[in-house]
Image (cartoon, rainbow, N blue to C red; front, top):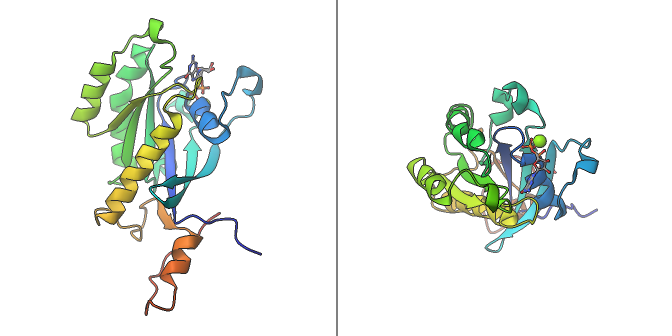
Length: 215
Ligand code: GDP
Ligand code: MG
């Protein structure tokens, strides 16, 4: 049987930020391409995966959602371990969620991979009339902290796919420039089947030892 995983790479991603900012909805919108309304609230999304095409390379994102842990401030070290990328989410209509970003960032930098790529995500962009955080101040914060930045709406789907793709593209760029080594332990990156087939082609004399695709 042919393996269903045709990805060149697998990246582990996290979605972090205060409860109620729309993390589960963002994940659902990205995977299912629709808004998760309250009727399916009980199906707590904890994990989702999707293959995306980034500049001709197939990347499988394995995305972990805190699934309520953030309410108890108990997002654990094991959750952060080996993540290649993260979406750090606040709600543009809640300054409280924006003020909490520094704490989330401290945890991520301390507990995740040193080279984790983080995209700051100002969600609920559709509620512009209730906005408490301007685009400008958030983009300044992003710049000061070396984060990518987008405003998104899990409701309309605006910028949701773009957010994940931009983050994945930055990680790929880092791999290509040599700044990131997929074979380093805890990089949050694995080679997929497609890449392994290339690496093992007879033209190469020696195939590097890499982990098998985990799909
Ligand atoms: P989480 O606790 O961060 O996982 O947040 P949820 O995904 O459970 O969403 C919290 C609430 O915000 C829910 O009532 C969602 O319907 C709502 N919500 C999430 N994303 C958006 C959005 O982009 N726009 C609007 N208007 N509401 C949203
Ligand atoms: Mg949630």
